[in-house]
Amino acid sequence: MSDLKIDIVPKALLVAVDFSVGSRRALEMALALCPQGEITALHVVDTEFAARVEAQGVAASSEVVGKLRSRAGEEFSWLLQEKSHRPFDTMIVEGIPFVEIIKIAKDLDVDMIAMGMHKATFRVDEILFGSTAEKVLRASHCPVLCVP
Image (cartoon, rainbow, N blue to C red; front, side, top):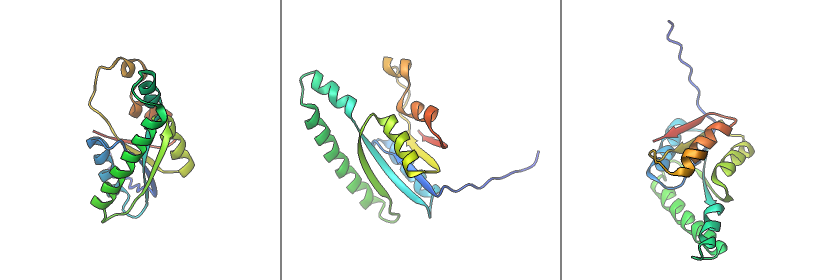
């Protein structure tokens, strides 16, 4: 067998960020993999979650979305300060996370998507429908790097 080595460095990379440890690792990996390219860190405010909160009578959906957007902005500010050695773009959108990740990856024409993975859980919805990472893997037009 030959030692074939293919060196592919992405020119544009989308990092799906939910501010978990895994997504922070995915951002670190993206910064290392794409030293000269364009990196966009994307956070999706989950509107289905906001609707479920409203359905339970806890708070209005718009209020939940506003608070989640504000918190994401704060988290990105901290991340940008922490990673000041390597700038990257940030984006906050609203919607269903896996749908928005796929849509924005296509819109930005990225070479790769990086995202963190949560430890396996036995939630019924994930068993029946899959996690966000699995849905992105199945629907993506480009390679997906999943970081534990």
